Length: 256
Image (cartoon, rainbow, N blue to C red; front, side):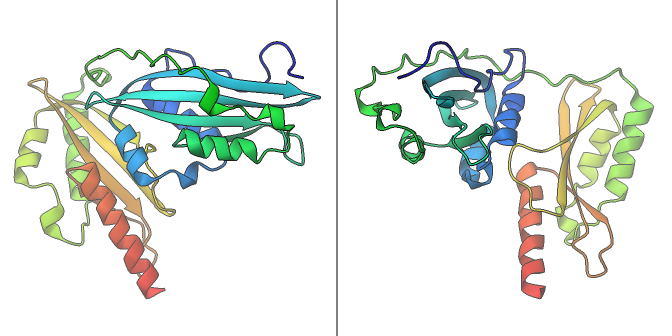
């Protein structure tokens, strides 16, 4: 019969963590995160807030399974939920984490665990969960470091100079270069929210301009060149950068 108290499943992340950090933690520990649809991860790029809770649990004879509900508030006002399954029923008895998009997928995965029949929750008969109340908050402004116009303008200049886009028309144009001459702070972060093909890295270069506006450029680093040389491409949007990666991957597969 079920044992008392909470089991050794994952402690929900601290409230202070950002929605992106919450997602990164979940994807980092889930063994099957690579199976999540790109569409789902794309929607989560706009997450503004996060809430998580224990959904159900069973503990018996040293074995356990727990399910968690992770919900994000998106920029369009909708909410997206991912379901996490945690258990220790594998051969080595170690804790395993899995993530699913729908409650039906979670139920199927839970039913496959080598646990007594009564350990599988009856999803249909459970009392409906109270909807997660997520605050309707505006996107948090990016936090830049101390203002250093000389450094930021120089960084922008070097970034644009090293761009080797196959189609020159896809590079940020003169208008972008003029705006970046007014940069007074910048920040570089690697994009993890959506999958990036092996051998490629995607970075966001965010600039704070003198008038308080923000401008981001997206840099793709890779060695998918005929001679294996390292090269960089720079795009004005994340979608354009990811499309460039997909074209490179397709071209590499064709030429293989």
